[in-house]
Length: 404
Ligand code: DI6
Ligand code: FE
Image (cartoon, rainbow, N blue to C red):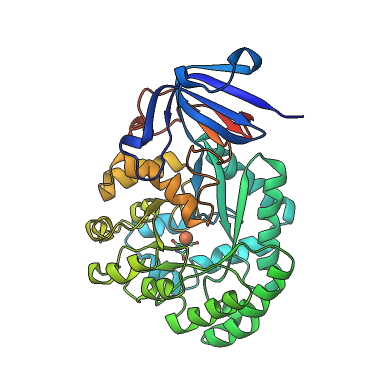
């Protein structure tokens, strides 16, 4: 049976591409049918007989597309508060990684945790995101670093989707760090774990995209390129942690492989942005990592804007460089640290984040045919979503057109 609702008495920020001022529609109505947006416009212009419809007043609230966190490491065991203390005393992220802390310490804790323990630790963080109006979360592997442990992480990620009304997008990130068993043998690790593991995980239907960490403390662009070729032969899209700590020209590699996104980008050279822009690759900025690592080098925002690169914002939720499970906090940080406008920040967690996950048109915009995944807010203007810090002004989420 058809399920249809007319939401009335609201202001809608559609975030539709090419529309100024958040695509705002005052005194709006939204018609959803079987979980899809059937119509959106001014309340006086509803094209059907309203008496025949299930109506719901939103009592003057603001409606946006539900938010999207397009870059997280949500599944992990333990935490790294000890490293937080070390960094506050002056140790750098790279120094800690080189002496066996960093990603590899979370690898140990993740391998030691049971499947259920990983699910419940991840659920807490997922619930934080949901209470910020998030409906789509990308989740990476990368703390297993054996084939079985990497696969288990993605199985945990898929399990989350059964437990909450969200869409989980999975990413194979075995090329995140060289594990101790392969110390000094990064190429062998790529050949024996990263690529055969990817094939196995993909055959199990566990992989939506493939990522890597291109950095002096991780993998060279040549090593990442081999992973990208394997992804290509499986028909999987790629993305990359690029230019986070130094300029390794990872963003250019990502662009050459038509990556969905290149992420971090603090050390991306402004002169490389043009080539990057031509690929249509989304620039995912991660202000939580910038903040946590007390980074001072800003991503080349002016050049990204000049070349019309789509900019997304994500939490990078992880226990080392970004222990943040609030997308609204990431939006606030993007404005305060990177001088994005609140409108850019909101586009960065809706329309542009959807593009970074290959979900354009389906999520991240309120437009006819898109999914009725909506967030209803107790705010007067969308700029408030980036403005408040701490606490969430979410009134409710609508998932599949129904209160979630
Ligand atoms: N860059 C990051 O910011 C995360 N991964 C990456 O490649 C950090 C992961 C961690 O420190 O655990
Ligand atoms: Fe990351």
